[in-house]
Image (cartoon, rainbow, N blue to C red; front, side, top):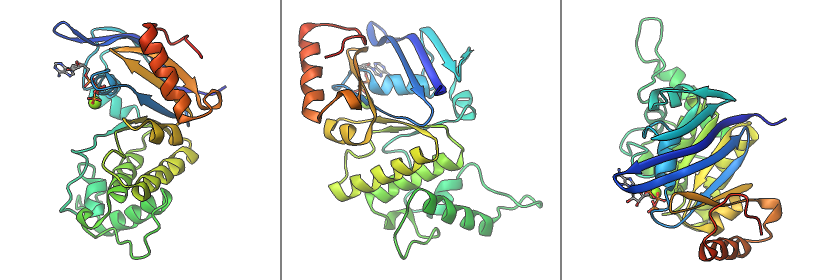
Length: 257
Ligand SMILES: Nc1ncnc2c1ncn2[C@@H]1O[C@H](COP(=O)(O)OP(=O)(O)OP(=O)(O)O)[C@@H](O)[C@H]1O
Ligand SMILES: [Mg+2]
């Protein structure tokens, strides 16, 4: 039996009279890569902010590893092993890779000083672990010297250092070239190989199709479709199925093609 990391039941979050998340139920299991898709304003960011505790839901239930949780907030979410990488605010680019990974959670020695050599070693290990292959890679280099895909890698390494079971990536490949996107995908594969789960939010359905094993499609705050990759022969099929359902007005995750 695969373990549920987190489960939402009928979660609701409104802003004034906008039902941004309008009764969403979903589950993320250990070690799976789930793709979350939907048009602008579908509720993707609101949903991940509920998962990461930034937004308190107005209704519904949240279960963490099978246990109902109350008073969910961002501190509890992080302590529970959920880390979110937001595209823009992720990194301090003038600072070193090492500083970015440990910022806010420095490794200190028994005198209370930051243990820079330990941090250097750990940064090196983490970056190799997610598949950093640059020959001249040095954890002391500023993040500004890295490519876009590698920067996402630093953010992912940081999440791994925090021992995240679930790493949420909001549009991690939007601004990236194909080569850079492939780097991010290989980092994700390595994270998955270590038994961690990924929730991948993307506009580009081809990217989401390539990386995810299961797709959740949102439309106006509701799940209109969930599909396993094995039932989804191509990205085009996914796109067509989404559009068919959106047109027909169904709003149930039970709908299958
Ligand atoms: N803090 C907020 N205050 C008021 N309305 C909000 C807030 N956040 C989101 N909304 C509204 O909720 C709806 C869902 O927005 P959300 O940002 O979750 O969509 P999204 O799927 O992430 O879209 P995008 O692809 O553009 O990022 C939109 O109508 C949006 O205007
Ligand atoms: Mg968004």
